[in-house]
Length: 243
Length: 246
Image 1 (tube, each protein chain N blue to C red):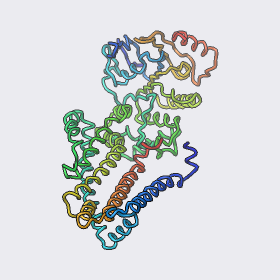
Image 2 (image 1 turned 180 degrees about the horizontal axis):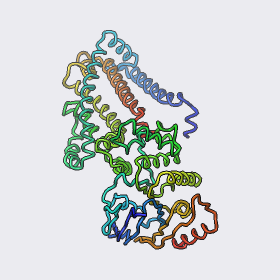
Image 3 (image 1 turned 90 degrees about the vertical axis):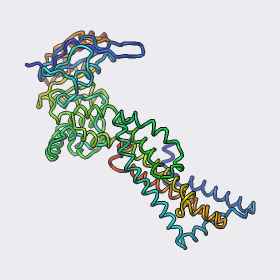
Image 4 (image 1 turned 60 degrees about the vertical axis):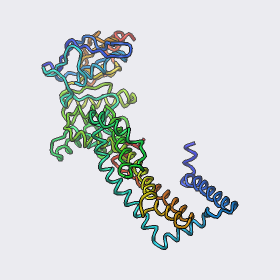
């Protein structure tokens, strides 16, 4: 199977998902035309709505507002979560004390907390902690054997060993943060893509704009994840994926 | 020659679901400074447990391991353990791995020493490579070099070459002998390969099944380089295999 797929090259990977997307768009189009829906826009109306948003400049403002919120909330969360996760993973007492609290808080809807920071902190803390716990014993023993200082142990063994898990945590965290920012903007803010959607509906049932906003949100989420995945290609973590 | 390692009345048991399992049951032996001792025994007899106690990773229930007359209670750079599974850090390059144990010295000196030992084990040109870019044999060389670079007085080798194919294992043995001829180390080698033990060691201990104790001791009187297919070697090999019940 694997061999046959390799023969198809890049087209073999791109074509099937494109076909599915084309199929969905056609079905959407046919349904809207067939039901003579007054509310639901056709794909073409969504495209013109997007062009309209780009032309009058509001789209960039909303995208910028959303990205700024995610960027600052998520950035702070990384700075807070990674050291905390390392500490909880390394010091048994810290883990025993804090882990139950984190496990209780984690499933509470982050929308209620209303902070992107909070929403992305939990996956990153827990992923980093788990990363420390799963460092293979043979490496820790080798480090112990050479009798190195604690700082070298951290710098040369613990942190590089955990880094791939930190990146996984960041991917999850950023994904959640993006969901949360849109939801938060729908509820309580006056800018951003979430606000654009709600405002378009409230102000005049502009469902073409609503759907354009949804698609843009999806595409940006995909790009954010893609950017995080680029981190997996860094030389210091490539060992984790090179097998 | 002065005694390097002195083991007295060593006992160790583990708690298992089936109750207390006695693994090492009263071991006494001595290893002289610069001596190469091989320990062979049936699988699961507690060889690795013994090695962990020698290297200071585990404490015995009873008895003691003395290194230069001092009780071994924790691992240290005086005796480096090379285990079967290997522990070259995959996130560091070969050079960084070799520099790891040289922590605290000037970086320039670390690098020079690392590259010197990389060359000794035949890894010249691979200093910047990551472990996943190396073959199994090269990985073993890196592990050996990382141990040698800190100039340990003792090398503890727990089936170091068992994961290699026969040819590579033979080549690694010859490399090891060549290095040992230049730098004197005391070596304790655990192996299930009788031929490897005869090829390398000055003395061979045969361990019994669990709970383990020393069942027989053989001197290996042949000079290096040893010609393995000789008649006297065959005789020794068969005597050891008889002790192992093969």
